[in-house]
Picture 1 (cartoon, rainbow, N blue to C red):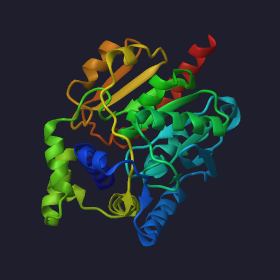
Picture 2 (cartoon, rainbow, N blue to C red):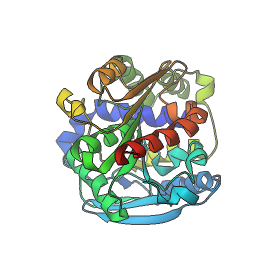
Picture 3 (cartoon, rainbow, N blue to C red):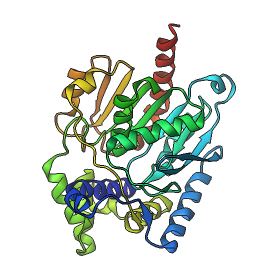
Length: 326
């Protein structure tokens, strides 16, 4: 669980520190050193090597840079199905999905990109001036991949990006699955800002571990961990200077304008989506399936991966059938 607690903490601190970003002006994301980038690359390679099938590597040029995308084709009948676009949370890149991908690979074409401006193998060339730029960049990625419409899945800040893509380019969305979306439905609890700040300060390790545990709804013992995912997130959070726009709560009229099939899945034990997220989603998205998983945390795709191995392919199939009238 360490990896997901770490990137969530850094992400929330980034939101709380937007004033500094505004004063310094727009920038582009970059690695602080070649050494830490190499550590990230090694951990990423180890994680992807664990998958049952290896991806094709694609580099897609867009206005703001070049986006690295991992691609798995669909198998059998799945090859002709509309594809899935996976948008990860902060500081994890495409490797975030390694626990989920074994259940999804082969069901239909899957694309797992590294977001521009965040850690990974994408290269940002121009700064984003706002959320609209970021959403437009995702539409450009779809253009470059030859995708007219996709089943878009996002987690955490990736879910916020997916939601903004959907409201700005609704014609590109066949279905929308939001795992623990941050900021766009409601603001995170105030306690998260406090503990995330503690976790980001140069304090004794025991204090930082306790702060991460409070954020993630776990214990300090669970926070202490090792392995390639922990190494990847550690390299990303310490070694990559991210340059991303801050999402905000989407207005009522934008949510109500969405007509595509939507899933919103939230953690019941520990969530960063805000206490009012489920109620607001049910009110503004009557077509949506909104589920609060009682034992789920912000690491929901991993917490409930066995469930989502079955639920999401069925959701994609039903959304595709609804779109074609089958």
